[in-house]
Length: 464
Image (cartoon, rainbow, N blue to C red; front, side):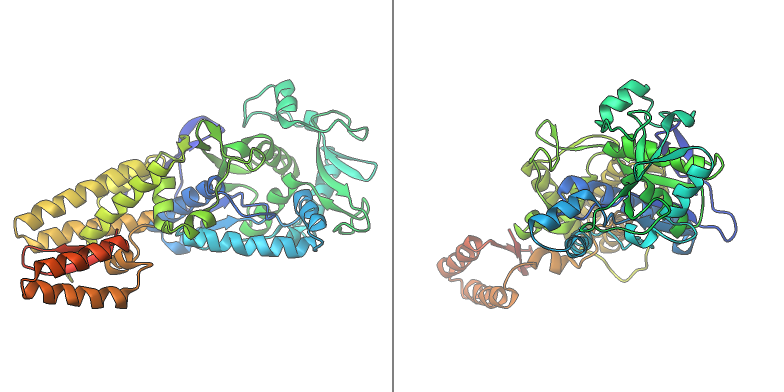
């Protein structure tokens, strides 16, 4: 079995993911959404990338030896602002968009993580945020002022090693708030006071709510049960300040233990030359694309089309190219016979084990398709089916080709109506009434339905 190696942002090298010790699973944590609006397609990229990694880990080590957590940030100033603007409770806003996120990611083929912790569920408790903040104060890494608790970055010698930025650059990049309760502009909030009309929890520092960064550190310790996890993932935009701050507070709260053995970051998704961002207004959501008729698998393949660490430009041409590729894959899927399931080939596992090289695996899928075509043209039906099965087996690790070909090509169409017209088309051809047959074919084409006639005269149809 190939060793899985992933690029570690901290060391800037590929690191081997170690086989879990007996009784100890591989642990993966990915920063999830802040639920105050629909996720845009850029937000979906880490969900799809790390779902693919999750699938690969399960393939390599077995589902029972992998634990994957992706959190929900359900307490945040943006949630509260939206609630005020819409005269709703923050809980109602968070619940609505949490469910929308789950539905959208499921439509893109993402498996349900083993854990989906909500921040509000991990504020109190032995390994909750309040307990972690108290430990940081007791160890001299945090201080209380004016109802706030702040992490003092100068107390942690390793601050900045993840993002490799000098302190002055980090302060400028974080757009930190200059406040009278801070000892230094770079110190970040662990706890802040809440007014009577804001959500709040009782704490030793008064009624308040957690800062963003402490949430993930506490949830990691609580749901995955480890101070040091195997893999921590997220978008490149989270490397600083979020992940830098996560690492600092976790190391200091846990006696110097590193938060993660491997830090992974996926590249930006862009619209034109600009990173997709809600603040810039240049976004499109998976829901808008799904409602426009693009299948979820097309969106998934498009998001996987570039190596996860590289930027990806989102265009209509990318969607059309991804749809055409899947049409080709599903046409080969029709050749499956009941001849067993061949194992995924070593070259596929090898490609994916080399820093999740999905484009290389997709290239192998295209080769399987060509091999299947060659065997099919030679009349070797069984060999064509073997290559088709290899194609499907590879797709299953990537979360692709999980439908029947018939369902793929007919989705969204009035199947009964099309079949009735197809029966009329066959009758017209049998009667050699070519004008009538052509009229039926052209009418269906106008409705977005293509008719195909095989060499043996068999007719079939598909969405255009």
